[in-house]
Length: 51
Length: 208
Figure (cartoon, each protein chain N blue to C red):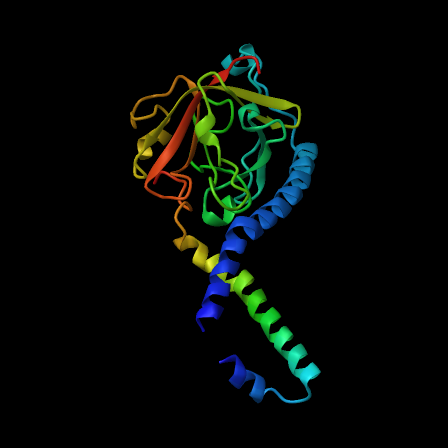
């Protein structure tokens, strides 16, 4: 998977590495701001109310 | 692929154990400032001379804020000398991510009836992480500027998540007319589970 991604990226090694880091950072950002807050509701221990 | 999945799971654990706490901590800083402003701009307490509450030395409650807005300061010595939280109005997950929340529909601090507050026991700063350590006689103190209300813990117990009777003005008696000034704290039990609720009940100590 990562070998294929590496071959797809344009430019010299340094540029590819920087692009990969940028992509990874973007993915982590999206996980922390969108995916994880949504997924938290399925973690046990989130229900603290009587209702 | 498996490695990627492992990293994502690990990141999720970091998010739950650390990042939600960072966010809640930031929210509490903001809420502390907002509560200070709310105290400064609050109308003078409408102490009714000759009323029962006034004769008992019980401060009148502050106005109930909008959902998600700061309501009161909360300290519980049993949970630590630096254990201090701003209680917000509302108990939706959005509000509980900010800090402990006041159940809408229950009375305010110091009032006759049942004043109820819920908080997370894990993640989001886990205010009630160690609520199971509360013992009868422990004090729970709420304040709004110079006004303060102290409750003394009567008991704590585990119950079913659907046991809404604990929030009744007279717990377990939905139609009874309240005469006592009660406090009810709720959180989950076990700490990382939803199976039961941990309930702590207290009574207002008169004269602050």
